[in-house]
Length: 149
Image 1 (cartoon, rainbow, N blue to C red):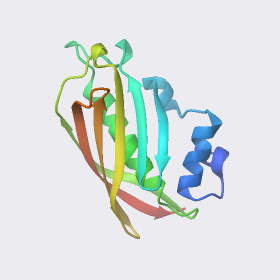
Image 2 (cartoon, rainbow, N blue to C red; image 1 turned 120 degrees about the vertical axis):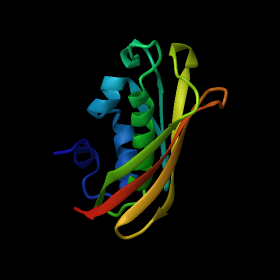
Image 3 (tube, helix red, strand yellow; image 1 turned 60 degrees about the vertical axis):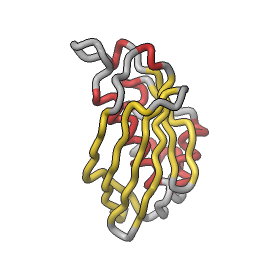
Image 4 (cartoon, rainbow, N blue to C red; image 1 turned 180 degrees about the horizontal axis):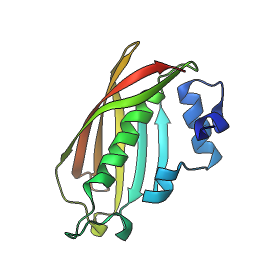
């Protein structure tokens, strides 16, 4: 059973995500990369974290996968928040643009995802990853497949 099913079985997507946040439980990816699911409303989701040594690559900056994971999570959960109890989703495509290097000095980063459009079978979302000063570090667009459970 998935964490979503454990915390919000039978609920619509927005209610599932609100139940997940309220439970205080974290899926493994949030634990592994040490970031949090902090906000959700219909068509919008926000994740936040501080990139530490665990996210560094050999060249002395935070690995691009850290930013991509936050952005993918924000896009996916923004779409999830619009689903019915009978629907699920999966990411088909994620395009990430890196605007500014992330280091331990970047501080708290917030990935905010927004639904651009959603149909019966496909959804489109975008997300930005910004620091506390509002500087853009990365952005993404995502295409997601909407499926029946």
